[in-house]
Length: 105
Image (cartoon, rainbow, N blue to C red; front, side, top):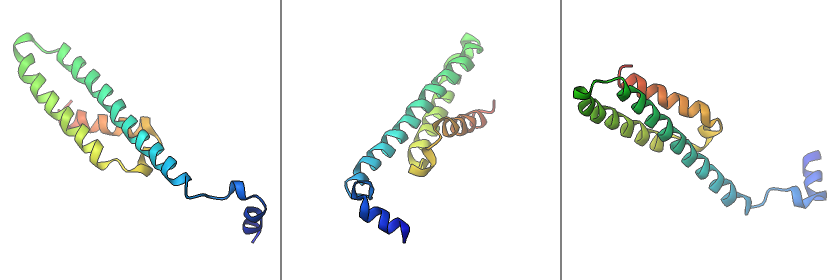
């Protein structure tokens, strides 16, 4: 009952329907940030892996790595839920580990 009386006395702090679109936009921005951060991390991983390959095998390995990178990015876009993106770094780490597991590194 204390909460109800507080909200009645302080209407500016009560939840408003107009907050919902802002929160939704923030969550969507956060999800896109996860995808952007993951894409950057995977590009660096692909580059470092290809740096160690010989010139002959580099083209074949690049195709394999880029296909795996695209698969993981698509999975991130479809599987990332709004509530799971509060910790962007942890989410990016999880998907980066999935990439490394996929390419057997």
